[in-house]
Structures are given as structure tokens and as C-alpha cells.
Length: 339
Image (cartoon, rainbow, N blue to C red; front, side, top):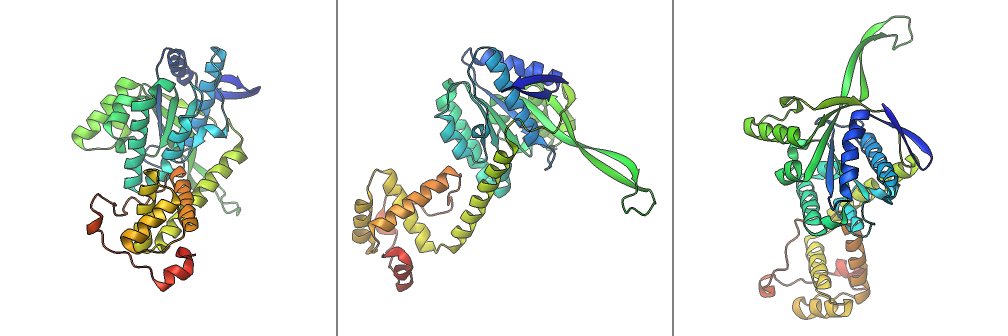
């Protein structure tokens, strides 16, 4: 175990892991960008986020020691792919970005697929920013090949260990056999080994990290390299917003969903609220105020920041004559649509 310093704080990292990260830090200034995958052995609560934060802090420290200015804080950590990508475009070159994908993956397979597409689109257009992306996810084998094999440089799979002990768990003086679960272990796969792992898993249709021998095992400690309270609050806020969003979607009627989709498509075509209002009135006989249209746009754009979209909404398409007429109801007007 080696130690390193960042902002005058001392942290620890596995020595072999640090050696491999040094190669990424050295090459990034030569117009490279990298992806590091941190997985949880097809499980949860293994400590993968803690290790990802250690990796991010070490890379920041290494870049700084090489004379490359790179910052590290909770601003480098994201729980939404859309938010991560949008901020990555604004961040200075050589930034370290941690995207904790687990919550989007657990939301739905559609969210996971969209998140991977966002990442691929980003690298196709903005690789010249020379960032290092650390993607935290439960399972390596659910990734598309372009990320798992082509884009990712290394795979670090975190797993729990089990130890049989005898413990007086009921404080009655009797020792009972129990299994103690422990975090803090990982297996490291370099580019070649992770490719063999992915290819073999696909070929025999078995998802197991044991199909291919790792390059080396390692240990890590439970340490937060950013402000722990800020990190937990940021994660809590995202989860709160995600849950609120899901409840709001359930409350929307099909008409409301369709209306919002039309509004956002016209907004993306640079139409202002007055023009959108006129379109809805003329094409659908749908009464709505420009103020309420602005409210819908503001809410939808906020949802986009959190990576939450209504992907199953109908598309406006090109033939508006086949969409049907949206008739405002007394309930919709009284609830604010016509305010």
C-alpha cells in the first residue's frame, strides 16, 4: 500500500494499481483520453464507489505532480450521464470525471442503454478534451462492446470476501458461527485481459469474472477523498429528484405527456413561448398560456440535467394531421393549463 497527498491530505492506494494509473497520467498529456471501469462483481454495496473516488484523487494528484493543473472535489462526481456529459464539456482539459452509473442502471435497461449512448457520443465528439472518465457500475458484462473493449483502458472489479468466525452475537455468553462480510478487495484487468474476459463471456454465455485470471488482486481502504457529507448530500439530492420525477410522470395524463413532447420539440427548434402557444391553438385548438409553456420548458430542462426523460412519449413526427386533436378539458384548465 502506497500513500499520496492531495490538498495536504494523506491517502492510501494499492501500489500496483498506482503504477498502472501512472501510465494513464503520463500519456494523457499526449492527446489521449481514457475510460476506467469500476464494477461490483455483479453485486451492490461492495465499496466500488469508494475505490473509484480513491482512483480519481490519485490521478488528480499524479497530474498535479506532473505539472498538469487538475481539480478534484464533489464537482467531479455525477449520478446522471446527461449531467456528467454536459458538465464535462465545460470542465478544463485533463479533468477526472466519476460517473456512478449504478442508479441509472437500476432504474431501467432503457436508461442504461441511453447512458452508454451518451458516453459514446461524447467521446466521438469531445475526446480532444483529454478527460479521464471513471465509470462505476454493478456489472461489466452489460456494457456494449464499444465501451467494454474498445474504449475502456482498465477494469477494476470490486468484490466482498467472507470469513467464518465465532461470535457472541446475542451477548449471552455463547459463541455462534457466523460469516463476516468484508469490503476492500479488487481484481485488476488490463486492456488485454478485460477483452479476453468480455469475449469469453459472450462466447459461452456465462457472466463470471473468474473466466479469465486477473492481472493482480489488490486491497483498498475505506476513505473518502472528497468531502463525505457533500458527496452523500449530492447523492441524496439526486435520488430525491429521481423519485419525485417518477411520481410526477405517473400523475401525467397521456394528453399532458403528448403536449409536453410537442412543446419541447418546438422549443428545440428555437420557437419561443408565444410561437408555441400559437401553434397549439391553431393546430390542436389547445388553450394554454405562454407562462405555463415556459414553466413546462423549465421543468423539462431540469429533468434533462438529471438524465430523466419520458422516452416512451409519442413523437411529434412530420405529419401533424395524423396526430389527432388535443381537446382541453375543464380539469386541465382548472389545474393550470389555461392559467
